[in-house]
Length: 328
Image (cartoon, rainbow, N blue to C red; front, side, top):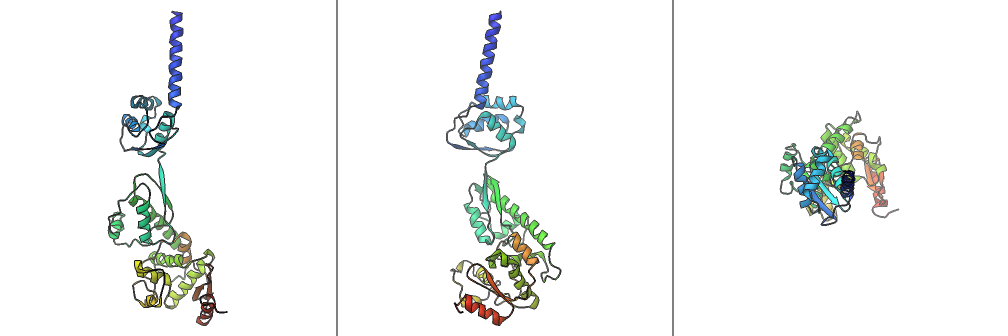
């Protein structure tokens, strides 16, 4: 009887060691990285089967019972996961319970226009292109902003997403981020700003974004445009002209372009253009509503990214001659 008890204990110990070894031993994978997609409502048994179907060399029955015995089977979260070399039954369950999904990211760059945003979404890795065949109007309707132009409405930032996420979900996050940033900037607007609405602030901020070469000049550039708006002068800013030309612009702005009237040509039309021309960052949003106090009405690029500011046309012409035409 004693011998049978000892044998039983040894067998139980061996089984325990075997189970411990299996739980912590890396699972053989069909490839270095496997995709595992768990839909909402998937049962623990189906999760175990999906792991095997994805390419993990594991007995689904044993994996399911590990999920059950762990006590965490009901805590498994839906999502898109990656099984990588070295994953064990223990680390697999931990990943599924914590919801450690396989994430990708997309960066929307300050100064990009809407066309560039759509191109970036189309190139993004593992992002479901639900907006690809939609018009701009349909996209804004899907984002619950019918009638709003998409230009400038999305905040430039890096956004992470799970594999297989919808590009509309990314856009919705960027849209709400811009809402928050714009509201925060508008709440800090200068008392004497000529801007009447947050939308006007967004439009001016987009112009400031495109005109700014060096961050130190940003508030001064906003100050120049604020002074012009306040005095009724034409804004005469090249980026708005370029935006109005659309895809026909070849990179070389000519005099005939400045004379060609479009809704965005601030050489031919007074005031702000009808929409933003790009996505402004937080610094440009703040500069638009809190411009530098300056008498400058003109500025010209020095050629090193910075700008020279002038209060009079004569001074501006001298600066243009010096920095643009090579005069002394």
